[in-house]
Image 1: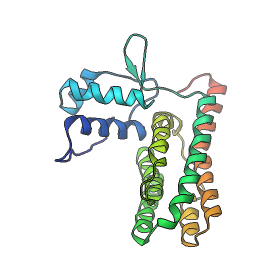
Image 2 (image 1 turned 45 degrees about the vertical axis):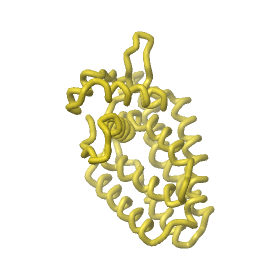
Image 3 (image 1 turned 180 degrees about the vertical axis):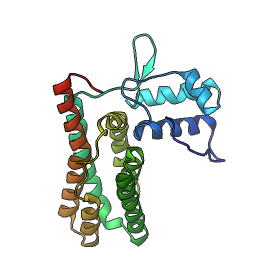
Length: 228
């Protein structure tokens, strides 16, 4: 399912299509292994084939989509080894980004992060996984982009793109996930200017969120022999 994103007046059609598809992939709008077609997406978005084709090529180059031998495009899946590698990369990049951003977090930025944390809590209580993913990424993005001129965030977002579809599949059961509010721990660390505590909170958030869901998914696959 594509997210509803209003096209800004300054955006070209190809910029808007790319933004909509990228956000949809990142937040679990597509299933792992799901084929995507230019004409189908063009119809859904109400645009011509050209901006969709350009957006798909760009997303393939970013690893968010994969081009098959028959020139068809689909959403990639993750196996256990690939999942662990993405989590390891997320932890390394995001803890460093958090540490570098912390001195630049001003009261408005902190207020935005608290608002995103509340949105994540509300989504979790409602069992709305996609909204939870959106709020979680928004919280992390607000933290990392507090540092001007950061070059790490695009690298982090490329990992979020790879996780999004997989997390939709893995997130069937949220009852045992996010039992501790790691965002609250991160916010407290920021107010205390405690870099080590902030890095520990970000590491635990990745481990307890994506990591917990991934482990549960692969355990179910090992038992049932099926990915869904």
